[in-house]
Image 1 (cartoon, rainbow, N blue to C red):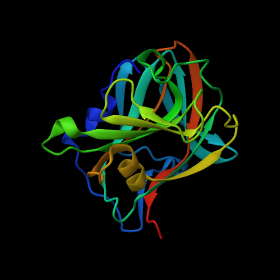
Image 2: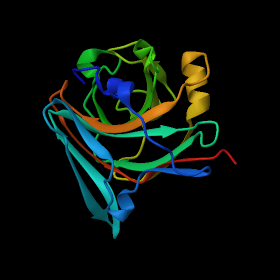
Image 3: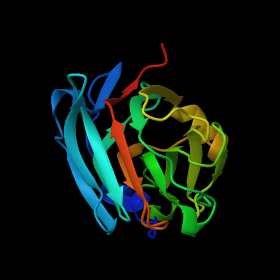
Image 4: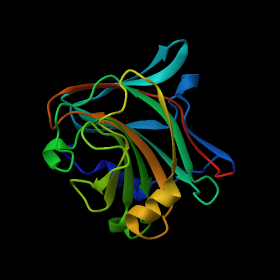
Length: 214
C-alpha cells in the first residue's frame, strides 16, 4: 500500500457498539453493507456482494490497485474482545517483501483501528493479514508506520480456494504487540491491495463480528 493513511481514519470516528455479547461489524451474509465507506489510495479495488453455495459474501478484486472499505464504530474490548470472521483467497501475491513498502500488498487483510483520542499521533492499528510469504503467526512492524503492526493470521502454506474461519483475541494481541492495554476500537477496515507489486488478487470476506470471551 503506497499510503499509510488507512489506519488514520479513526481520528474523528465515533459510533455506538451494539450489545454486550456480540457486536455485528459486517453482515455480508444478509446482503448488508450499511455503514461501510470507501477509502481510496491508488486505483480502485472492486468490492461487491456475491454468492458462494447460496450464501452471500463480500468479493474483493484488486488489479494493481489499493482501496479499502471501513466502518466507523466503537467497540468495548472489555466486553467483546474476540474478533471473528471468515475469508477465502484465490491466489497469493508472487514474492512480495512484505516487510518493505514495495511489498506491502496482501490478498486479504482486516484492520482494527484504535483511537488515540486527542493525542492523534497515538492512533494505532493491528493488521490481520493473509500473508503470501510469512509463516502463520508471524508479526512485524508495518512498513509505513511504527503505529501499526502486522499479524499473519494465514501464511504461505494456507490453502487457497478454501473458506477459513478465524478468531482473534484483539485485546491480547494489542497488549502483546504494543506492550500496554488497548485504547478504544474506533473503526474496522478491510482491504485487498496489489498496487505496489502491480499484480492481481481476489478474495472473499464473510461476516465480521466481535464477541465475548465466554
